[in-house]
Image (cartoon, rainbow, N blue to C red; front, side, top):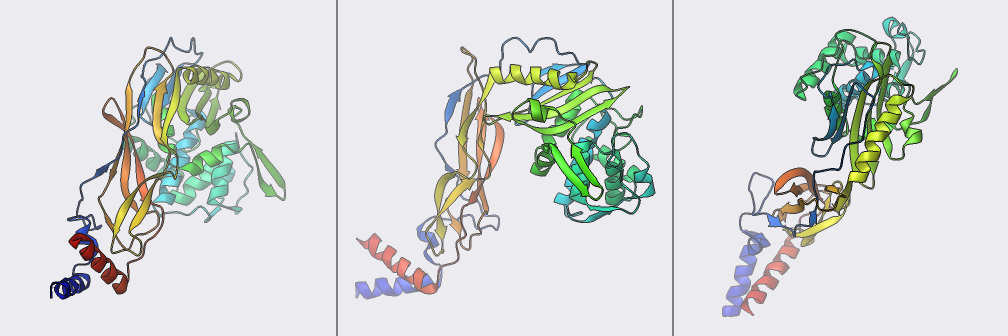
Length: 412
């Protein structure tokens, strides 16, 4: 009789509640319920934000070296003084364009038609002709590689209706990023007294630009064929791509009033840095002075990686799923900058936050948690954790068999 009662109870449970209650109470179900987090074992390393004596004399009016992961300034010189960005302006042009793509307001394959006004812009150009059309992505590549003023105006007019309206969007983005030393008067950087920024603000723009891998993809192109008839081959203006391994962005700038400028980013052995130099007066000096900053920085700091991109961090139970566990992986590298200097100490740890259970159906790549990176207990980065594969809901027969198995396991 007791055995029959247990079997009937199991059938009722399968038809009603299902087996999830046997695994956890009030699991996260995507509808706002929160489960207690599962905390992984934190990794630890000793590090420091300190550094040896600076990089020496940097021959630029304004300069900065930044850790883009945290926004921490590693070295600076007149970093909030106002200078003319020249074609570094185009980094914000690309940022605003990619924001519109990310928001669904534009697509990279939509055609951009050249206006008479866009054709008229000289300086750095790719000799666009009135009525000529290119996909938006190709126009952005022309901006990134050849610093094309005509392409910048064509993109601005296409995305906002006019260059003036697009510049208003650029200034709105500057305000959103909290930039206090920046005002844009155009989308290309040809000299205008009201087109100015600072080394610090430019580094913040670069830090934001890193969220779009496409921008780094474009700004790391050394040579690009824009047209086959007439043949138009674009060569990068950023010689750091040839001279300094690990460089994959961003933008040069030069006018007589601005001098030589460069906002760049370099990644070596997992450590990414951003540097800006402005108002350099010696030929090629925007490259050599930037390399001085990076050479000094990579001697001071390294990158400690806890998890690589796509690495399995944990497995968590699946409620009412065809399988009972799903693997959880990172969406990017997890780690932090650490000091190479002896006698300097700072604690870098990680903390994995996951729900106790996730209910089927589960999508592949579904966000279920995060890894926190902490320095001395303070959060400096967050990396999302997602499911490695999809999990469909279990059939009624599967649920019944699991509940019967669970009941008899409990009785034993």
